[in-house]
Image (cartoon, rainbow, N blue to C red; front, side):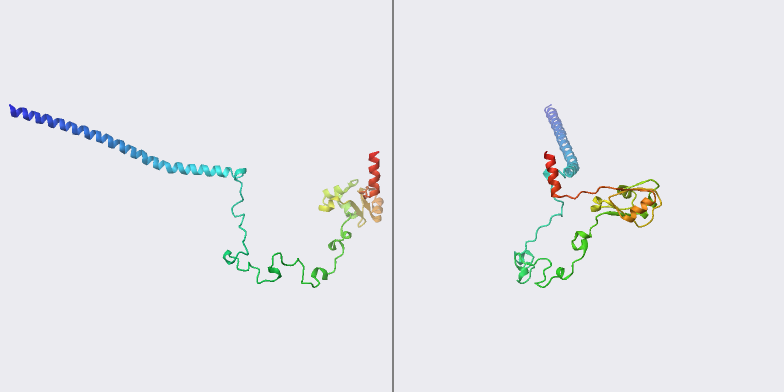
Length: 243
């Protein structure tokens, strides 16, 4: 009887030990499962993190590009500004010991050198050559006073009874005025023949032009030119305005 009771006690103890071992193994499995899940989550987060960082960097780059021309980030374009050469600071600066000016002399001094056109005291080229006549020599006599047209062109461009003015000639490309010529009046010269009745308005006419236009039955209208400014006229107009 004692042997049987001892065997029953041992078997009960072994069963209890086995149950405890199973419980411990189950607890360990749960813990390991939690750690593995955490590891997987961490791995996923590590995989997602670079993508998020890249997208964030792209967004920042786009914002920086969008804010290119704002007052808080204005700057010159890369490469548009160059560092100034530091000459005269010794051969260590990369410009040589004499700063590229050679060995002494007038041209090696600070503020040295000569004016453009100076030839050492001899008669320079711009004085050896003769002056040119007209506008090329700086004289106003070479400049035009009128936009000119010959009567021979009027019959080819205008119809019977048309009115000829500077604006009409410019519109039909008979004369091309630009720059200073836009402020000049029109003058009609007598080269060619007129066979149409035209009304010609200009600031000046040559004698032959008037005769040919009148012979064709046309009309010559002399427009008043710009009045020359004089001090006497200016004073008179000033007094008249004050009165």
